[in-house]
Image (cartoon, rainbow, N blue to C red; front, side, top):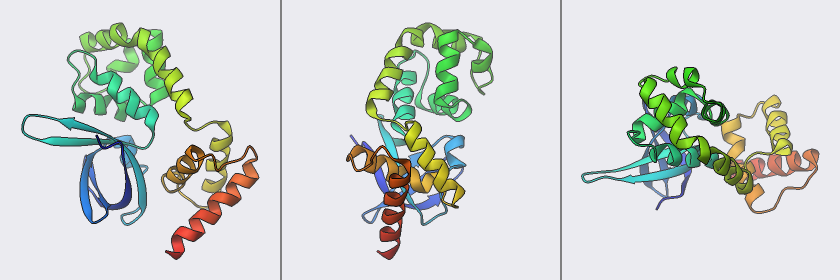
Amino acid sequence: MIAFLKGVLFQVMSDSIIVEVGGLGYEVQIHNRMASQLPAVGGQVLIHSYLQVMENEFKLFGFYNRSELELFKLLLGVSGIGARAALNILGKLDADRLCSAIASGDEKSLLAVPGVGKKTAQRLIFELKDKIANYQGTVTAAGEVNNSSEEVLQALESLGYSRSEIYPLLMEMQSKGELSERVEDNIKKILKRVALSMKK
């Protein structure tokens, strides 16, 4: 299982990217919202991935955060929803909006997704409504962006850094316990890491 890829964005195509890791190029299928968040070609990316093993091919699907990856897996468990359909849903609705629509039984929001008809929308709500609460608890436990981290991201964006450039660093440092409770200290730490990476 390939849990994530950390490397250089080598090429961007209509619905996929190629990430170079250690001299190897991995083609990763992405949704259109993620495409708009990518750094320029040559920039560093950290992509959480799902490997789909089919009879004649292997496909990697990628996401910027684990919350979307876990939601993608949930969608795959719904009868009649394949990987491409799940990716299209996440491309139209972010995790919060999708969870809200399913939890509240909001068919209208789901019908706004290209390729999702009334029966599919009803099936998504019926099969996932009880699982959404568990999913949201898993995401919180996994340490997704909290309020403090969001403040760090916004502060660095105001300094001209892109979210896609800073987010992987932030998640890596957070997972290693390198961040403190003070937003100012975390900004300094991340700027120091960025400066070090530019010297390499």
